[in-house]
Image 1 (cartoon, one colour):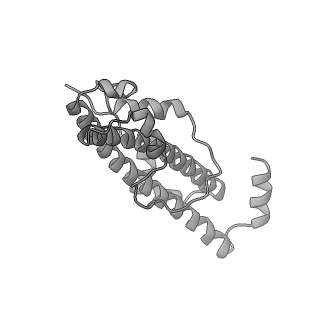
Image 2 (image 1 turned 135 degrees about the vertical axis):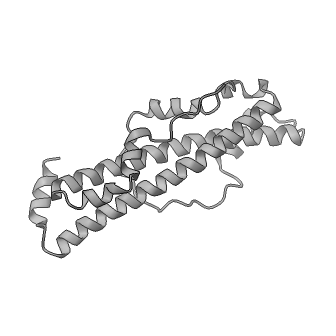
Image 3 (image 1 turned 30 degrees about the horizontal axis):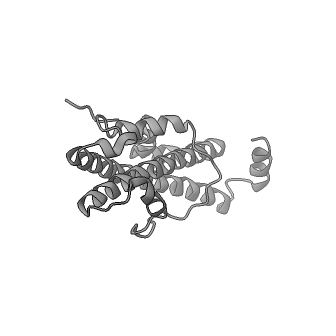
Length: 186
């Protein structure tokens, strides 16, 4: 019996996606709202990084299955430039956010992605059966869908927090000079 890995981002993302999170956040002092905004940004970066890892593996698995089905004489290594060029991938669906934060603990995300294909060692992909590869592809695709939904949810939280910060400045509840002084300390 295989166990499912925890949802992408784990408890930190669960907390951000809790329906009451934004309701409670807007009642907090300005410094706390800014801190929560930074935390949400970090989680979004972590999820984006994890998604890129996952998509890379999924692209490789799908291309190996295609190579086998077409009896392509080239090795998977020979095909890596094509795979890495993202041929055939549709347009990005991200929100085009400029990232200023690096992923925290990348090894954790690598482990999470690796846990999605337990029993199918992708480092020895050419030794795997078609059935194992198809199972890995399904698992990765399903996880990518869930991860993407969670990432969009975190982006909505970020937008909500940014909107609250903007409202406070617009309504005179916050002082830009205080913001600049506080940001100078971080």
